[in-house]
Image 1 (tube, helix red, strand yellow):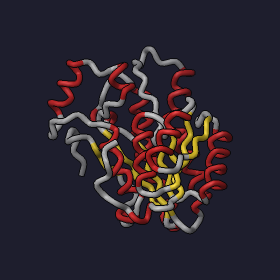
Image 2 (spheres, helix red, strand yellow):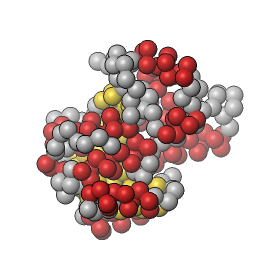
Image 3 (cartoon, one colour):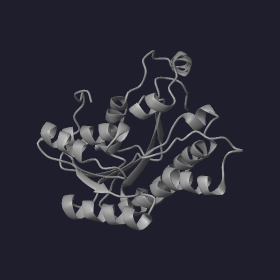
Image 4 (tube, one colour):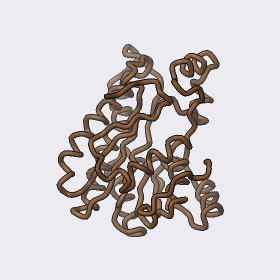
Length: 256
């Protein structure tokens, strides 16, 4: 990750929980919050002990890695409770983990639909539920990662785009419900962020060139480009923002 440009003093000491915080964009987010002085916990299915030690070496303290399947609501809530025992009740939730596996309408089975919705929408909802319980009336910030893919009307992963549209709708409803408790709920919609997974699986030279042609800014997006927008939404720098979907895509889609 690049060195942080902006400082958000209110995030120093914040209790932060990130889904999928050990790889890809999530790892950049963990790194970014640690750089602000936050206490970070994250859930992931794969072993992230090497990343944890990397962060310990870089920041002088390690994030709390809680291995588990976030689609199991009991496991998800248990890890969030453990994070609160270690770092204090959550003040920031980042719903980041997602699965954009390619598929078509005709290929989709009922079991695959359930699996994709559990990862890309259900886990987000129940993470918000537990975060709101912990935040109580003291307040806090929730950032739900969506995607511009549904705004673009992209083909190739219709359950994923359906879930991302659902994330935006959920964000707006929860912002209204939780606002009286001083809990802000916003979404962040990245463009095509070139994680190692994207490069290994789907980023052909032709598709990369075509997408870059659609961007106003002629530079591909990296995980680090998502960090400071997320920090902004998590901090009191955005204290008057809730129920919004902020696009960070290099200028492909236009909102408003």
